[in-house]
Image 1: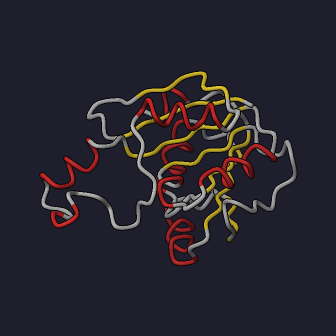
Image 2 (image 1 turned 120 degrees about the horizontal axis):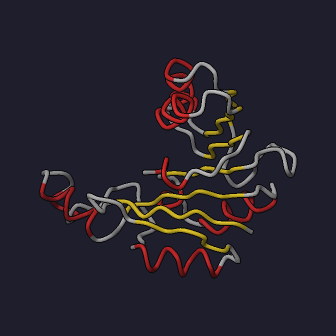
Image 3 (image 1 turned 45 degrees about the vertical axis):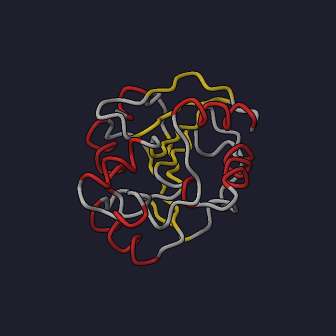
Length: 170
């Protein structure tokens, strides 16, 4: 699904790249892209090195990104903002890089929780992931992004509707 919203760019920074699964998929689609991954979890980055050896990896916090403005054309951040007590701080850091595009993805609530609960996960917490401190649906996520002075150029919640994905510009 991110493939449908992915703009044509030559450099991508995945802020919160985790284990590198998205990057491997991106490179299969667009092998000439220069890809950077940033994550604060060293164990995840070790796996990212194996899953996507072509990605340039650095350890860091998504609210303090060690890149110069204009260096990535696209900041990609999937399944990150819902974990942050202050997601606006991460968006501010993304904006300071002055990318042409920012592509964001978060769980689409309450469907995300409902499907987790139906699959037997976190039933005592009604399917809520224990590490999620932010909860949005597609409409509330768009409002949040607009409130952060991002222009949402496309927003979708593709089947099976458990993710809200937004492509933004400054």
